[in-house]
Image (cartoon, rainbow, N blue to C red; front, side, top):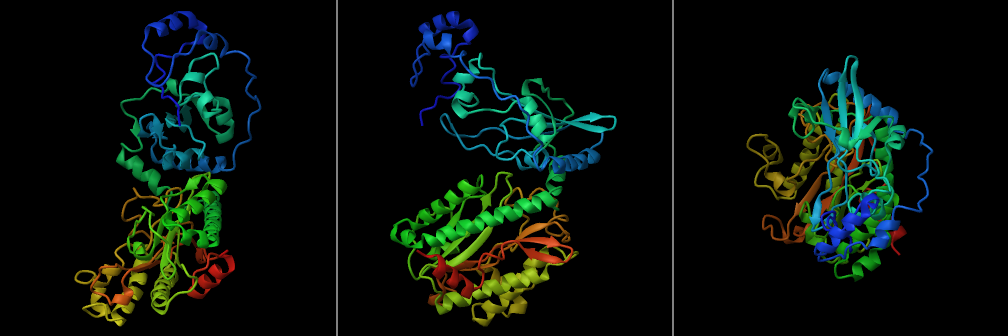
Length: 482
């Protein structure tokens, strides 16, 4: 990559309308250590000979009516107050290279701008007598007679491609728009990320999903399932590579980028003993026949809604007896958690139901120093948690750990409602050096994770079509492995 930053080009650029004096200044300035100054002929001609931008305005996108309803709830909760929801800006990776931009979740939830959102944009709720007027401020595309067009590597269209216009975005999102330079911060502004009450409110607003969101969640799960199919199909190539975990990651990422925006979080491709490390994202190990590989991955679609699925696969295609015992215990725990999900039940009950199974089974295998009942004691127990230290469920949506700023009594201690989307993901992990378990258990880790939507009639497993039982997983691998 050889793109200069805006600072690199600061002394090299010239507005085409005043090219001559600035060109003289360029002759006096020492050139950048990476780029030579723009020559006079370039400056004289760069702003001419361009076709007009298309003038037709788009129809409102599908989510525009839904985002208007969400904004109305925010407006009603903060009457007479000016609210600011920033999209966030570019973050530097190194030198003049930035990470891919991804807008703040609350901003996308309230505007409908997803993968195409503009860095540094602001959604502002301007107080009015009848409530608020929502205005979207962003940096509009530069006129081609300005130096920004060709010289600014962060925002110039010559560098990053076409950028949106105010009127086009207004029609697309159903929002009033204004240039970012027209925004003036006020002393009494309440800003997401700075104001705790507002930050909490917009997070809790996502606890119950609307119909559009549920459809996007189903889409994200569908694409993620195709990504898992891709990985299984490539198992022979994965096994051959000395860093097969990286091939797993790359195969899944290709599906995420081709059919979605990207991955919703760093893929966990953990083979053999690595499956016992809960957030193994180094993904630099081999994938060996006879081992299990734990794949925890999710596709983020263009609306930024993401799936979060885990399956644990026998690399050779069949589970050993001990692997099957561990895997099916995890599935039993997941099924118990699913059965516990009912409208009005505390969210924490999902974890408790899974833990009851985990404690019973590891006690049955002789791995606990106490009985299962004692291990489940809230104050003095927990011995079984050595083998499953994480929680069983979290909310899911436009963030992989959605609604993270919600109050505890709305989240962990909250009651299940129709429209909530959450994961169920128990596991068992017997680390390679854990002397509390028999040798045949060591180095085996298994997790099953599904994405669940709560309905008035009970829970629905959005990822049920991705094989779950040990028998189904073996059949899946036999069918797809090339």
